Length: 337
Ligand code: UD1
Image (cartoon, rainbow, N blue to C red; front, side, top):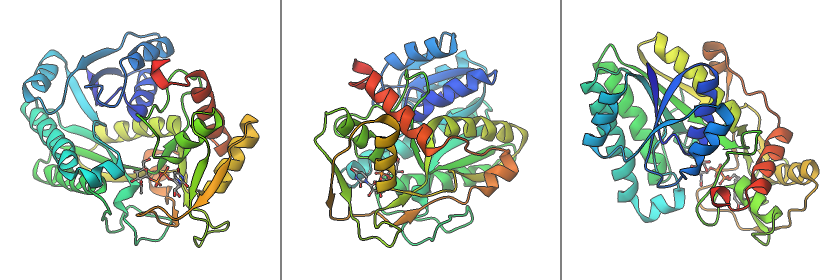
């Protein structure tokens, strides 16, 4: 029996692949490498000592996906494959709705044809929208501020409806907070295409000299130092959260939702300062206007995952900053180096 990872060569998928293998699962990766590199598979082999079973193709291709299910005894799917750039989703909404929704619908149809009833989905804290107050609990009303976020809200709903209709189905929606860091080997990490949108990849590229300075988007928020506060979680902790969620999913039917965060918020300035201190590098910055769509504070109530999944994030902000920098400095051009 194998666990299928759609988008398994991506940032979170690749780290989850490592943790699943180390927990004794057999895995199959499907990825079309639209925002990832085949080099990830070589790196996974070095880390795990196992040859990675993978298929190069799109989950939008039903014939291809059917074949993957024919050739493998799939027990459950962890569904990472999706577009994820917020700004691009505002400019090209159809690209996002079409890829993220259709991909999920094709996957669910193929799963049904092969009587595979277990799915864990990569959702996001973005589904809490702008109006909820942190700490965010899973029972709050969901909404979104951009097409990317709406695809997460809609797919959570689709999965919940499918589990309601098919009593053998087990669905787990995982709401990630802000994943950063990298595997401590320095062999896999986040490799954004072009200029990074997210804070830590941006800081890393400033520190290595690829970018001149960090723009801090606003220092007049109602937070302790005026800069935005987020719940940053080490990607290896997040990956372990998937293993815990999968175990729970395999034992149950119905639908469940869990926050995967640390429950602690850190400001942009705290991140910059910690990154500089831990890594002995300098991160020059300028204060700019607020970024459209940003909120002051976002962090998880992480108690449900602790109680039900027996999972908590263990790594510190220092670990996250150190591991992000190790990955960046060993791989200045991501997987192309
Ligand atoms: C963003 C997305 C979110 C997505 C998540 C994935 C937006 C509005 N939200 O979350 O939907 O699920 O990434 O990881 O894009 N910052 C700077 N300078 C920068 C970049 C960021 O000051 O160059 C600040 C932001 O204002 C924010 C914090 O850093 O306060 C974190 O930003 P980011 O890493 O982009 O994550 P989110 O906006 O929380």
